[in-house]
Amino acid sequence: MEQLERPDEATWDERRLWFEAREAAFGRAGAGALSEQACALMVDLQAGFCAGAWAAVVILAAAVVDLQSNQRGAVPGLDKKERDWLRLLRNALVHEHPKRPGLTMRDQWTGRDRWERKARRAVEAALAALYAPSGQTGPDRSAGAGRGR
View (cartoon, rainbow, N blue to C red):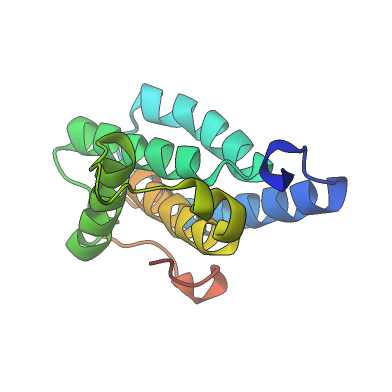
């Protein structure tokens, strides 16, 4: 099972470099009040991303957004549509609907690329929530990996 194997070094490095480049781009906008726990979860978010633990990345990214929202009372760097998308996806993963599970074994076998796109989108949402100071949005997302559905 590819998803249980350690990624090769080139894959890990590509993912790490993408994550760090996106974090640097968002970080250029500065940051408002940061949640200590959100910052700490970013370490696990990056490790999970590099490992290819896509569902875990979505769940952690949603936690970062929630923590930042609790810290600031709002998430100025993240638009409502994106926040709602992330919350719905996270909820589908952690609150199983027996007839429509949010993640299936089939997804784990054949949907890895689609889940990677969702994970990249979730990372960008977490970075937007973490780094955008009040009244600003994050950087141009065209340098990201596209939109996951």
